[in-house]
Image (cartoon, rainbow, N blue to C red; front, top):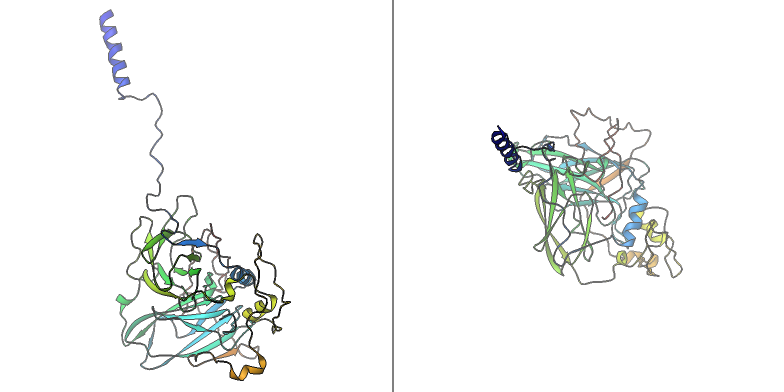
Length: 402
């Protein structure tokens, strides 16, 4: 008996030490983790920097604006005839300021498919009342198209709010579903102002439509954007403009690719876009020379008529936490005496603007199911504020650089 008891004890100890049994409770299955790629910093010669101080000033002054944009005509999924066609827009709570000594002010951008954007800013508006714009557009080629319209800040940076973006789908001759992404699927729209930028830093900007919300939890990531500049790539998972240095003079290839959480292409081929940014030798760019004076800010934002800007011009305070830099004392300002000889801006497509007055009945908003407008879904570190009952998107400040 003693030998049998000793043998049984030794067998039990052997099994226990070999791991067949466990004296500790199981921790259960491991919590799911995001196994896809993570955001990375710009690589190679590229470096992310803060926006120029003058840009930060303008961003702070426009932050209180809540643009409400509508495409009144044509309706979504309209079949348009051959020849020119009319586009009718309405914008509220967003100024329209044409090109001046500091470039274009707040404006609207109209983009058909991936064609060069059309920037609308004339005649000017202070944004205190709704304004309607009528444009005669060039004939469409046969097939299906996407028409996107969004509010933009001076220099071309897109406003990232649900109310500041609208899109309709248009057709000519016949509907071609292969030319359009599936309705409700994620769309990437490039908003790089390649036609406005000539010096560094360069704003890499984009809009996301119908992409899922993310970063509501630490391990919650549904999409990434891969930015490739001249072969150097990095990943971002936040919806905010990235300001870059390290580009070269002349042409620079910029590719934007929307990826899913595993790093695979999301909704290809519509979400892989290529732009070219052409930079000139460094010149006298007022936006890169410190803060703007009060008179310059009035001019670029279309506020009260600016006084001549001389050596005693003063600058407004910067956003909290920023240190001022020296300003250019005498910014370029056209001489009223020589205004007749001033070079006129390039011609725009036929357009005119009509203020909406109390005497005219404003158009009634359609039911959501039949509306000609598609609200943008903007992704950021915060949850998107949904449109209110009237369909007006609520603005939200852009993310800060991390």
